[in-house]
Length: 186
Image (cartoon, rainbow, N blue to C red; front, side, top):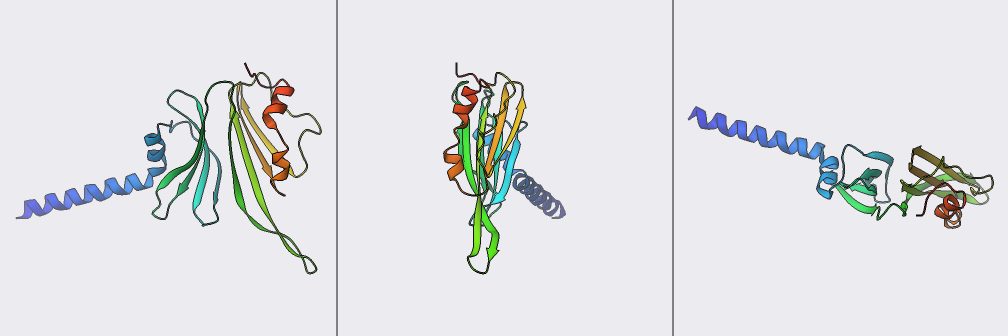
């Protein structure tokens, strides 16, 4: 009678350990199931959406080494799901993904009340750079921050507007990169 009890306890302990490990590693398991490379994950942003659910914006690659931008959201049970993704079609296209970080009270005056500003984000990613990516003076709109990360022909450009989405709507990054001779469209 002792032997079956020990075996049952060992099996239950093994199952609980496996479930705990799977729950702790479910971010990477989600990426594996989707067919993405888990050793090539770059977390661009981590935040909480308007429902207070954690999300991560990542750059990774698929099995054929094409760039992938994705937004993963953690549900109420702590399980990660891919809620948005942009996969590269060919070497001429630039992957793009955008999101909004919820606003906070930035300025307050007794006369006008408070001003709530959101953080508008767009990321461009590609592997068709011909030279060091730079923007010329006057090409970047006011209230916009640009972060460029480049390694040879591969690049990631993260653009943030702190006022509204309007500056980003008028900021045509692929056109400017082509005009500046920074990327190849062939």
